[in-house]
Length: 227
Image 1 (cartoon, rainbow, N blue to C red):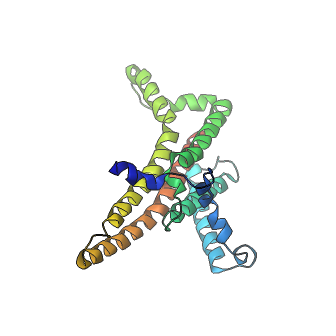
Image 2: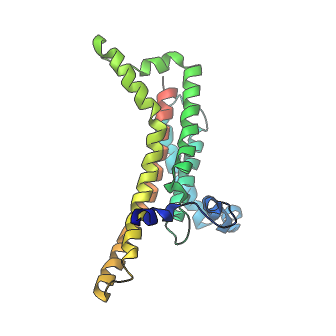
Image 3: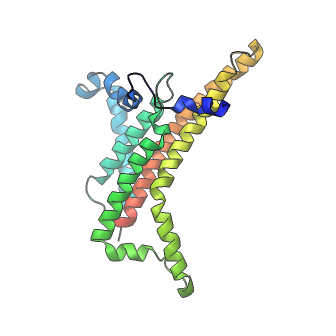
């Protein structure tokens, strides 16, 4: 029963029989002022700086044979996940990125699109990827099976990695927060300090997991386009 109540903080339920919680994915767009979009500001310069750095790195990862503008998709993916992760750190805001519904929705279309692109346009190259170089002849059937399985579970691993990391930190913060009601003053100070440290750690995790998701997606794309 305790575990049910603990995980209920992640339930996407709301009033009027509608899951309005998913609107938290767009709440950042609503609270951004028009100055951010029209007149150059520090926020705009920061976004431009991050985007250029990511573009430079993603372009290097995908190689010279990548399609023009493909890095823009992964930069947008990174920014979207970062916004969702940070929104979940605010009180009473639903953490959309802690659900497989969102994470699998992001990873599965990317993987399907890359598979269709690769198998339709670069069939020989995709078959060559199933057998690494210098593989002994007797091991080739097993390597094909292993590579096929690892390729099929890629969208699941991407989704689970992001979801599990976001859930783990939030659960730990929830557990510590539930102990404050009956804690003494000395213990309460320790809990508050621990919560601040955890919040700092979760802020770093929010950025790191977004970066990992975008980089892995870029690497999967580079395997198909680099030949």
